[in-house]
Image 1 (cartoon, one colour):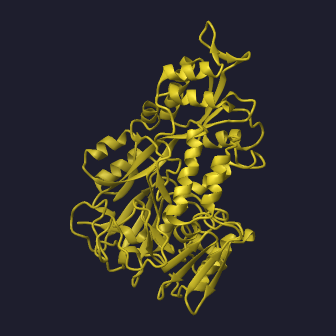
Image 2 (cartoon, rainbow, N blue to C red):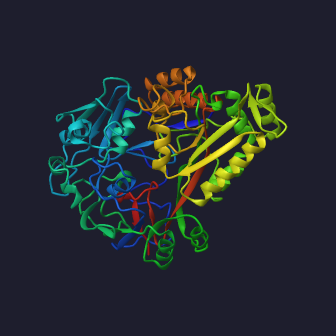
Image 3 (cartoon, rainbow, N blue to C red):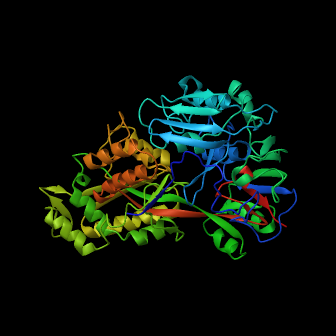
Length: 534
């Protein structure tokens, strides 16, 4: 089982980014091949308004995307290699219960104040304090975490009372750092940015656009990026463009420099030969309910259901022909660990073999082809997040395949809130047999709460999984760091897939296209990465 993970390093200064050239510039992954433009405006499409702009209070993806313009992070993780690079921190160390960061000197905030190690520690403690109501508590900052700062060495140390998997990445790469003024008044950042980022928020027009201006004197970006790096824009505009067709039109006309485009509009954008970066996301994850009263508590039933449906076809249908087979439940980049938990762990598509699997387990077919065991019919209920035509079509494809296997299949689609209520509310934990939901996370450790422990409403183990091999591997992984941790998490996830408890089968691929623009590194609109070309 091959995997790639982030390295645990005592010092990381001087390392170069894989996707960018040496020095303070670089060839963009979305460059248009021209010379870097001087100043200029970089205008990109946002699909949803962020509402709240405080990045250490709100957990929405829109807030997180926009915050990367005006706020910095302690470290940068390359999305393709998962390697960690310097940013606000020059060096770092990690143990299972601690992470320490040596903070760069000379970093300034938009209000002119200097970023101190104590300010960094205060950010972590602010999120950890339940009285502040941060949505990031328990996610980027573990519950019970505390941070201290040593002004002499400029070292900030975060500790947790118990092992906290990927503490370095959670705190270092996923927590935007707010300056003192933003910590004193968390609502102030809804009108202006109070961070150390390349750009400063200057105009807020909710549900229309947000304007940012470049800060002069910025010289601490990843890959040595400064405010004087060729191609760095002077102005950035985040424009609301929820309609994909409209965004595609504006991108092709040059009104937008960047936009994520999918669906039927992708073909005409592709025809323009614009450069792009790919953003994969989980599109198909299949969970089987193992509560004792449900037929999917039988491993033979779970195996047969996987054998009976062509996952390659299902992937193409659910992603409208624009996706790939998933190799792991961890599908959000940058992934802490990159490995394949699917290959060799689930059976190939074979309807005849699927029928034989059920025959051997006592699920026999009657004259009408429908199966039962001990007088109990094979009745299955599939619930899925079905808010678009491809997902509905995929559900129909699975229903047809499982009906041919001999099951009676009831299909229920709905928006994510409805499906989450069915599987996680605890109202009736036996009310479903198969669930298609996506747990979007870059960390394999996130799944521990879903694959072990109490069932809803007391816990998150919605599929009622009891897998001692998974629990042992997860416990082992929680006490490790670096490659050793990724080895153990890969082993843990493989225990889930080969027991047919959860099967990732599809990842969607969203293209972010660029017109006379690009990214010097990464796949998101990080302020330091934005480039304009002539």
